[in-house]
Length: 231
Ligand SMILES: Nc1nc2c(ncn2[C@@H]2O[C@H](COP(=O)(O)OP(=O)(O)OP(=O)(O)O)[C@@H](O)[C@H]2O)c(=O)[nH]1
Image (cartoon, rainbow, N blue to C red; front, top):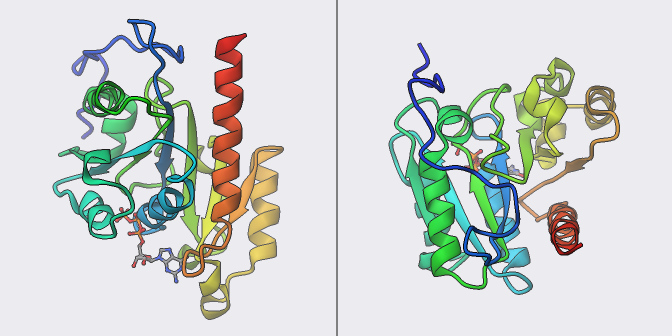
C-alpha cells in the first residue's frame, strides 16, 4: 500500500516555479537524479560535484529510506564542504518524498537557498527506486534518470516514465558492457525510440567518462533558465 495520496499528505509549501524566492532574491536551479537501486546515482552526483564545484556554487540533498548512507559517502569523499550536503530520510517508498509529499526535500533546498548565498545549483538524489520513479515538477526544474548496463540491455526498451520522460537519460557502467554481454548500440537505439529528441548520455564512472557532457547539459539549462527569468 502506498501512503502517498495527496489528500492524506497535503503539501506544506506553496511551490513557485519562478527563479526568485518570495522575498525577490534568486533561488538555485534544482536538478533531480532518480533511477533504479545501484545504477550509479551517488557516483554520478559525486562526479558532477568534482566537475562543477570550481565553476558553480552547489549543494546536494540525498534521499535514503532509513539511513544517511549516500550523504555519508559524499562527505567521506569530500566532494563538497559538509555544510553543502544534507540527507532526507524518506522512511517510505523513495518516490513518495520526491513526487507526492515533497515537503522534506523542499525544506532542505530552501534551507540551502537561505544559508548558502549565492547558490547556483542543488542536486537532489532520489533513493533507489524502480522504472516508474519521477520527480514532482514542484521540486525540480529538470530531472536526470540514471540506469546501468548491468541490469540488462533491454531496460531502455521496457520504457517507463523515468526512461521516456526524464529530461536527460544516463546509461551508466558502460565499462561493464563486455562483461555482461550488453549491446550499447541496441540500448542507444531503444532509448532513441522511447525518447524521440530527448538526450541520452553514456557514462562510465570508473573513468568519469561522459560526466563533462552531463555537466555541460546542466550548465546549459541553468543559463537558459536564468536568461528566461531575466527577460
Ligand atoms: N563498474 C562500474 N561501477 C560503477 C559505476 N558507477 C557506479 N558504480 C558502482 O556501482 C555501485 C552502486 O553505485 P551507487 O552510486 O552507490 O548507486 P546508487 O544508484 O546511488 O545506489 P542506491 O542509492 O543504493 O540506489 C557502487 O559500488 C559504485 O562504485 C560505473 O560506471 N562502473
